[in-house]
Image (cartoon, rainbow, N blue to C red; front, side, top):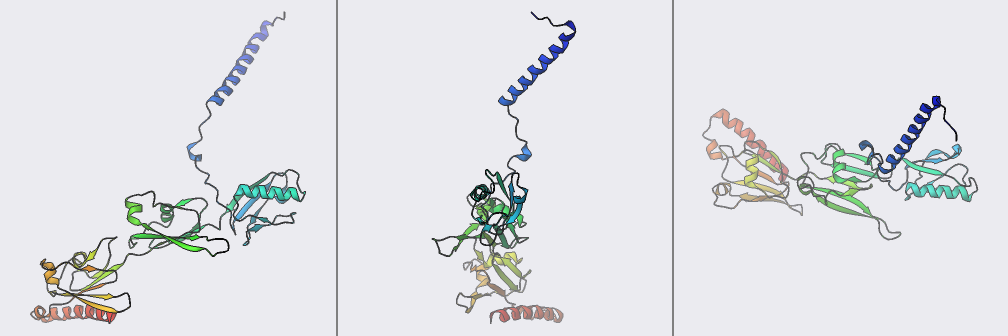
Length: 331
């Protein structure tokens, strides 16, 4: 039996303790894996198919002459040095292109068992354009799936003159050989933003065009307190009384009748008489207005004649300007 010298006993005990601590830490790490740091979770977006003009980084292990950044041609192919054949990249995921490059290197007997890595350095084939009534129209590349709200947020949000719907145009591919057709999807702004309907917050993958048309306007001129152009409500009916309220009501000497000047669908121009006093007294129904209508409230000339000379001159200038604007636009 071997005896341990007394002077070596503390060293041996320390060694046994360190070994025991190492195996205990390893066992704990296997049963309790470390949590991923919150800032790294979800950092990698799902990969997109490679398209024409995309910039891909190709790395071949232990082959510096093959490791480089290559731009996909307009025909969808890439070319690497030492390879006779071109490799099709368009439509492939990065992992599929890795396999295609490795197979080409093996087929041409350049590398026996190549290890290839492909990453997309720059997307140029997945544009999403946002135009119309947004604060900052732009076109950006989708490096991953993008929701409609995210795209509008990148454009600075909707402008005040935005209409009640958003138009999303996608290219729909037909049968083999057939030209793609444009598919337009209409998204109601009220449902997307106010109601927060997740079904309306569609996912975009690139190639879409988002257009936000401006809302239609009704033009109110003549003897109202604040003439101007007022937007048509989002899906609600615009009427004579609503437009008068937006223009802060009638002037004291407004006429008892008004006119709507409307351009019809066939291009003709129409003048519609409005019994304004009867509508105000609830003796006649309120009348609906359409986008681009001109609501003209003329002057009650009989009452204007009782005013002083200066007031008549000022009133004549205002009324004449409004009348000229109406007749110059409509006739």
